[in-house]
Image (cartoon, rainbow, N blue to C red; front, side, top):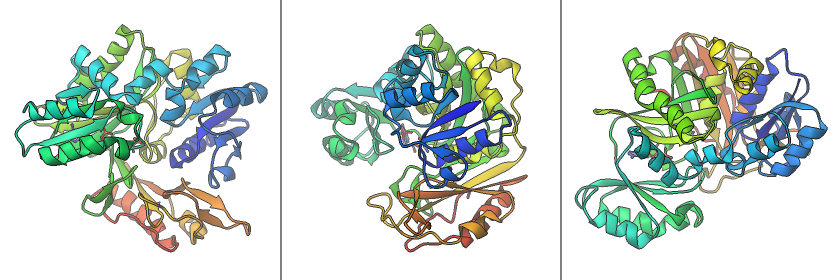
Length: 423
Ligand code: AMP
Ligand code: GLY
């Protein structure tokens, strides 16, 4: 069967390689892809948000399954468009994509259905948001408050503000930070304290199947310092959640969320990502994403043993509960290598050395995010996050040491990475 993956990052490279491992995959296409993805699939020069052209391509090339990587195309209604044309595609429709595309919608949804999340308000202007802040509902002048832009902001829409002055400043500048369209509505939240963990699930609209829990590292530098990024590394480990914590999350959050989707007539087929905080009062939802995470996916899919096409078929057929999805026991780790200047102004065009040596390290996969080829055929940097060096092992220390061994083979001028992933 021919497969089309939509997107161009490390996540999409990991998704393409999961499809490549399936004996059922015929021609594999990725739109637009990147230089690393090109070594395992045919890259098609169509942008991920050009929904009509993607549907034309799928129809013309006998694509059996289209798999969407990112939120932008989902929010634009790529699934609605494909379904209208009778094309098979995995992902939620635009109405369900609102769970990520509008934080105000997601918070209202959780409130309506009693799904635990931080206390919040939604304001339609900066002035009203400041009035909410000054009402004292989020604590006194020194309280930490989380200021969020409502819309999609590629990870730049959240400011954890220490004290009312910082929160006021964030509210007044949210348009510049997150983009004015995203900051059209402003969500204020109480600041939750605890351990962060992410849990992702496949859903066929009726049933869901959980993936291994994963933890990401959002800050640029060691010790959780420096600016927020799209993610500098992830680990997946069976010990991230105890059995009690997991069943608590499923009963209080995962099951109620899918149930609520049905009650609101939002059919959710695809991947739902629960960003969670484990607080003293139990697990709470920080955010929903309606897709695989990047770089969470890299460390999740390297542990997948079940045929990825079979999972997609089960999601399309609505019989996910008949499939026993298998994962390798143990752990995996993904270390992101980023370009100089990331996340503010990444420098591009640097030649990447050592990829062949890194690929020889056992149980390591190097996923490409921002890479291209120069005229001489060398791999060069072409984005902020450049590579995701990912390893699997029976234990976390083993996975981390393989990943870092492969990292030590790779270099380019100004390469940045965290040395404390998984610590
Ligand atoms: P989000 O995009 O909503 O997941 O927010 C990005 C990051 O901000 C999260 O991964 C958390 O580290 C932090 N964050 C968001 N909301 C809260 C909250 N209510 N309390 C504490 N931290 C938060
Ligand atoms: N790594 C976080 C995300 O994909 O949203």
